[in-house]
Image 1 (cartoon, helix red, strand yellow):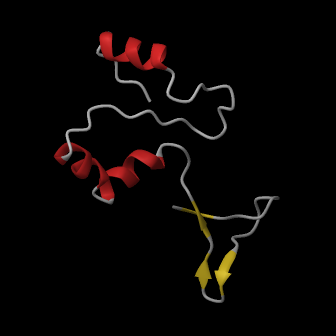
Image 2 (cartoon, rainbow, N blue to C red; image 1 turned 180 degrees about the vertical axis):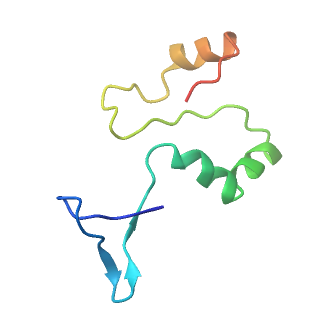
Length: 80
């Protein structure tokens, strides 16, 4: 998590008196959150080998595109 700043970038924003407002650290924060919260271990336990996740700012991404997922599996490519 990163502290929130005002639109002009000059001031930190408060969530409450005495505590900073925080926002996600970008799309890369997803992977850390999956590990930190035990999700990856749960996926291993349930033998989940593949997931498809895309960022909200990629509006043209086709959700669960079987061609893209199949290509990545066949090519043994790590894709994020």
